[in-house]
Length: 107
Image 1 (cartoon, rainbow, N blue to C red):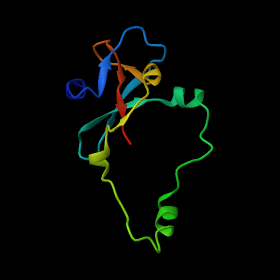
Image 2: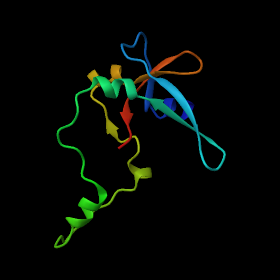
Image 3: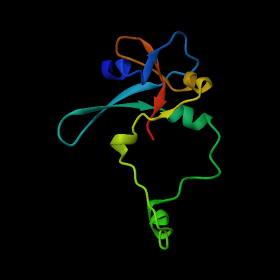
Image 4: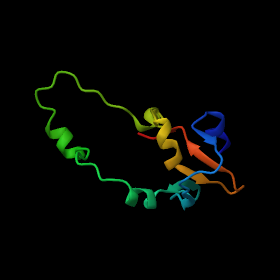
């Protein structure tokens, strides 16, 4: 949490309209991963009429292309800035009872 705060990926806020729970999920190697349970906000948001293509569709569309670009998720993580009006929708509460919101979100 402190790394995310110091990197300015999250920031503390007061009186959020939406508040999601933090869930700790065990990793196969015995460590824990922090996840945010956004299922309630997903139910409240309109669905995207243009879903992202599946990986096999992307691969099938590459024949004849001269240039392909790839992005490693570790390099792209926390790179998509959120619109300021959306910060209130992606807030969550910490174990210290602080409310924080994402400034940017994973790709």
